Length: 485
Image 1 (cartoon, rainbow, N blue to C red):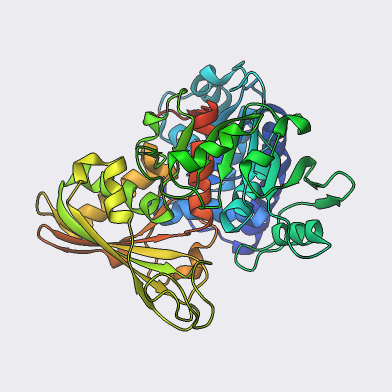
Image 2: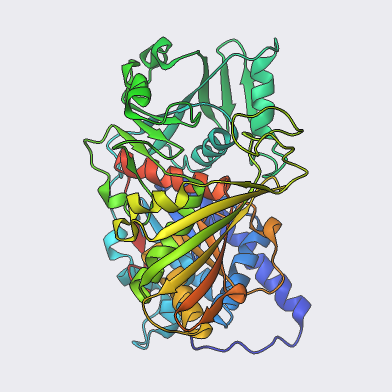
């Protein structure tokens, strides 16, 4: 981006004018998504169902990472041109498309440029012949966040449809109301964006118009999904109770269930998928897959990036991980070592299988990584510290510039985010949709030794990776524009 925007003579007037443009963008973006299943982004940041200020902050983000301004004055005409086209279901990065137009020297009008760039998007058919039914089995932290994402991404209703949630009956008479409340309010991630209606007569939750059956069962064999009009469903198992093929195959015994996606590391020969890295291994014939762990998803994209750019001889991964529901709030018996101590009061040294699990996504690193974890008294957002011996010498500036380019302009934009702020702390990354956020300020490089710091929302960021795997399993593949930045 070469254009340098001068400072406005009147900051307040400039803000109000840009605010009005952002406000005008909201119905345009919403209509594209609702009627045509078009996703709109700003350098990877979702613009669908976002507020005026969120859209303006997404524009401001470009200044941080591109070291230049991108204002609503530039993006609004591009969005107007997009709305004139007969688009099919695609994803469009409004920021990078606008930047590409600003750098174009052919003298084209905005309409001419956009029509040319999006020629392959016009008249495109639906990504699926009919909507794919999805069932969530287990309604804990990850199950509820995956539900939020599926409801948010329902769009025109032609792709993934959350049809049911399977859970155990609680002790309270008003169990359904309590479940709805947990979905509606979250101490970490805030309020559900929309409305939730409880229909106890049909044991359903109606979330933003999506009717979701709440099915009570003690085991998968008890459930017949066809009774609810559900067929060929993908079951997202977020319980973590079964992690091998024998246990997860129980879901396939349920009528109406076709495939299973586990939200935990799979054991045995189950494919562990880190979306963005080895999702190409997903085959239509696969009936049971794992979305690996939050930590594996956080570190594998960065490790792959470092392997490609510098080589990795060996390394150690230390995760500073928020406590989880597996730990005790106060000291009590726990079968795991140290995990019985009060989670909210202690740093708890424990093991992590993430370093070994890397080899399932990146076989080249098998035996080259060690790892450990420290559980700390925060409820969400973790950090992975990668201490690596590289294949060649480098310096901090070269390494950071390389990862910044990958985070902004490579196929790993959905997995790696980038920050150069010296003031960020863990709370700033709650709600991040990336697998990890690379903290460039903290990078340490000494010859061929590098220490990298990667933040990750171990709940929401991981859930986004789960949904990406889910889309791939269903055969949902969106074209992304611009195809090249």
